[in-house]
Image (tube, rainbow, N blue to C red; front, top):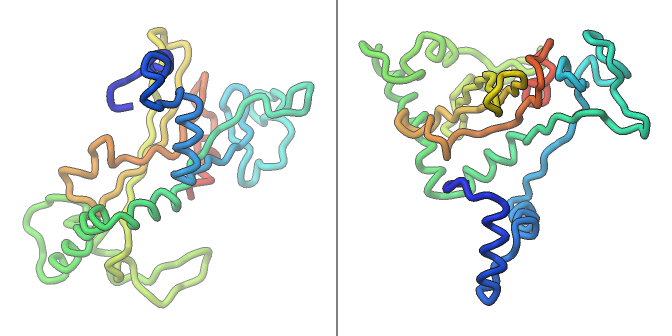
Length: 219
C-alpha cells in the first residue's frame, strides 16, 4: 500500500523468492484479515448508487429513485456497499500504548481550554462549538446520560468528511469516499494519510441520490 505495489508484482516476488517463505497476495490478504479481525459489513445498494438499503429503506425491493430492482435473477444483491465498522478500528488504536499516549492530546487541550479563553484558534478545541459542548449532558436516542461531553480523558473527538472522485480518467464514473478524522491526535498528525480512517466507498457510478443512507451504518 505504501509503495503502490500491484497484485501482479506482489505475486511475482513471492514466486521469485520462494525460499523466503513469502505468501502470494491472496494468502497474505487473508492472513492480515485474520490477524486484524476487521471484517466489513456488506449492504445491498442500488445498481446506480442512488440509495443504500439501510435504515428505513432496509426492506425495499427496488430503488425509489430509479426504480431498478434490488436483486438479480439469482436473488443476489446487484450491487453492494462495504462498511468498515469504526469501533473495532478505535479499539485497535487505543490498545497500542504509544498511539494511546498520542490520543491524549484532546484531554490536554480540554484542560487548557477550561482554564482560559483562547485568543487564537489552533484546532477544533479552541472553537465555540466544542467549548459549548463541555457543559452539555450527552444525549443518546432521547436519553440524557449523567456525564458531559468530553468529561472523560478517554473520550475521542471525530470528524467526518465525504467527497466524490473519478477513479478513471473520464468522469463518466464517480465514487464517493467516506473518511473519519481523529481529532484526538495533534493537528499536525490527524490529517496524515496513515491516521485517516476510511469507513467505506460509495461505489458509483453516479452521485448518490440519498447519501445519508450510506452514512447510516456509521451513525
